[in-house]
Image 1 (tube, helix red, strand yellow):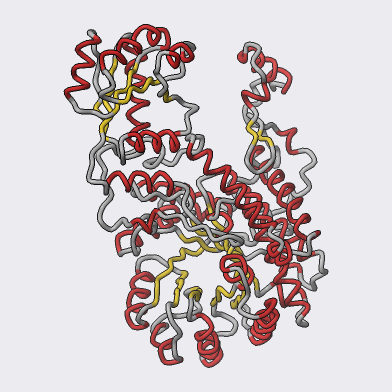
Image 2 (cartoon, helix red, strand yellow):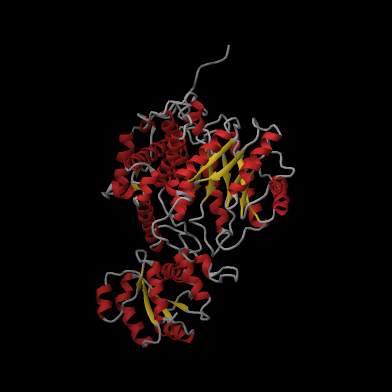
Length: 613
């Protein structure tokens, strides 16, 4: 007989109660405020505790289901074999086909064709030549999308692939038209929904064909919070569901034709929880319409790594960002995943950047074996609580949108853009103050880097059109400033005058070098000057426009006035820190201070203006 006795791990260790943990923490805090020091208030509107225990799972209603079971928190399948997706731009069908076949040989099993113009039926055949649709998922998007729908469906029917072909169309009038451009292609979108419904009927017996895609990544890339992206994506998806049913489709017929696409940011655990919450909420939305089959409640979710946090400077860091983002999506159990090539912000992706992007996923699959385990985050006290918190906040916002008449009406009233813009402004402020770190842009820049010629002003220009979603990158303001310095023909310099207290001088010199290098200002660091006059002379000899006095707070009251007098107005004097003697120094004409609470962006703009750049 099999031994059914279950032994507890670490049974020899006595259990430790929450009260005991809290008492130990209180001692370590030494009277500091617990909530302020240890509880994280997220931009999504809920608190995250410093630790979670089994008791924190009590009351979570979605626990207990298995992967592939309603409400699909743990996944819509019993495996985690996600598809490796990569998009290529179709300028010439024959060349695109050759590239597509290379991608397939390189490990891709989900192809994205972004069309730049309309194609004929013959060109569609040429594009899909030697691509076996039952084995390869194909997704069509772009300007010429409408022209390929009928030829592709005819090909599926002619070749008897109704049961096996997996083909999707990024037809998204709600987000790609209304939300990004400000209006539908037809009055009130009615004609768009009629065509969508007709297409859904036409493909009713094509199980692997989805005709509507909800492009939720646009919310994330426009600066929304995770909760806003999820709520607005679900709301737009619900509008598609309602409009398709209004056109005579059943809820089962409509739900099976909707595909979701969402972004993945570097917020590692939150993104895992977002996709888990998304599946649960969508399942409950569809369930509310009493579908005949429970499988109609499954969310079909594609993920694409973020462009919001990609940078033009030190761009290879984008590879690392894409890796952690891909891990979040893979662990969360998405249907398919696309890693955005690292050079997308400033160039057309080339063979190298595309290869690195897809290899991220192939490494996660074939070397890290992420595809061999389903929902590894399941049961984690932290992730399960995050899932619940995100679901609760997203559902609350979803209901607010529904009260306004649904996504379309809420968008037309300006509510969606207002919410996203407010979140983007908060992120911009945090980037400017370095509360959000974008390596290579606002923190730890490559000091000697100069933007290559392929980086144009357009690549760092943020375009803001009123009334619509405006995807952008969070680093753009810093990049535009630094690019302006790079192309100014000048090489401004900041000299680190380290004196007084050695340890503090070195620490503040490192801080200050990072600070000024973010604007492309060349920095000259120095170990230490025992003699202040020697240091000032070296600063003046260096022809630096900025001299940064780096020392301890206790030394500044004495050193700063001396340095100011010795400089004689020949350079901008900056004090590294926010000493208690700041008012006294300001009274003596010393007004420039940099510290951890500085708005780095505004401060650097101010110094560049003083230098005439």
